[in-house]
Length: 146
Image 1: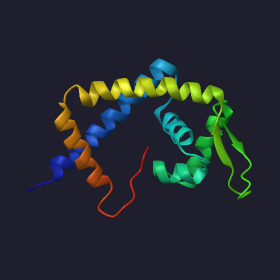
Image 2: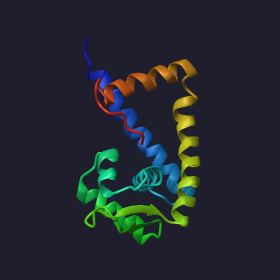
Image 3: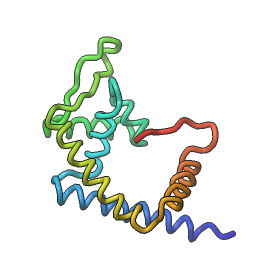
């Protein structure tokens, strides 16, 4: 079986989904998808550190640090001293960041429903979710939640 067409379709789908969700967030809230993803990790990870962004988003430490700088500059997150490790501050959302994350999540959910749930029935969506999860997390690897 020639898997190149599947590969091409998966890449195209990823690009189209990214662009659609990014456009929705920019239009609704003037927020980039990359910033939403970082807010989501910080907002859902207890005692979040830069390393958690690296793990969950698959980015480098430098990229994660710059993302935190952007969020801090915007007033959406802050770094707190980590009593267990002074070199690794704890990241927390500000009230403004929490509010933005809540609004952005509604926009993301709406766009994903339009792009994924509308064209697929419940069973097909469950099968796609399971298949992609198996591809992203081969047997024996830890599940990601972001």
